[in-house]
View 1 (cartoon, rainbow, N blue to C red):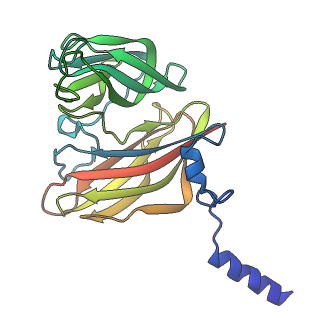
View 2 (view 1 turned 90 degrees about the horizontal axis):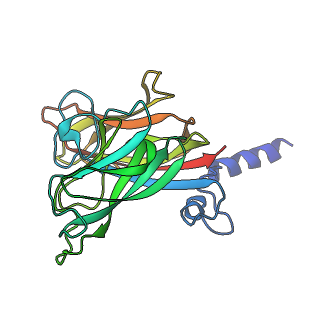
View 3 (view 1 turned 60 degrees about the horizontal axis):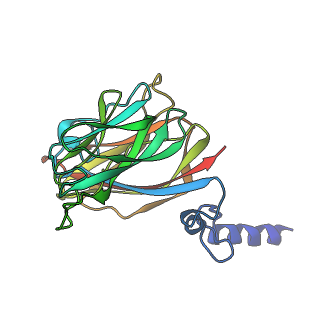
Length: 269
């Protein structure tokens, strides 16, 4: 019996049980998630940087609007409003005509909508939105001949708060913010953080259960230049309705331009 226990212990150490990466029918779990073969499970790889804006010794959100400050979360679900600073982002223009919106609706469940742009005149969604995950250029205007995606900077506003943006000549927003749907739980599977200008920095993942609760630090990571991807043996669980955001600050003498990539899955309750 003693020798059997030793053999079992050696086997366990050599082959750790990690349900996120254990093959099923010779396919890794996350591959099956990506192929949408598992009912009630969705997954994303989320990437964001500060689009050249630098961060000093105070924590700031990592997203492509870092130069304008942190994102302020909506406190109520409203229609989402879109506006470009270039009139060519419209039906007959040379830029983007339609925007694909992906996020949580007023019921805090995943939703998608396509919204036509009207240039510098605001256009609004037909449905109500609680959180925006991503906005993406979907179609060109009829005058487009060069393939340019967004002629101008496009901003998305919910509850009078800017919650996403597409930088000029880019195709989509880039933000580390995420909110778990009301009918699911989320699990962060892996992450990679870097400081593009080779300066030392500290990144932190913070969460809150609801807008009525305080932000709590879930994870801290020290980085200098580039870090290898970290695969979590035990994924971080994020509760239903909880908000998450990644923040960064410098720990060296110079400001930083950080970037963050992480994988997250949601599993319906």
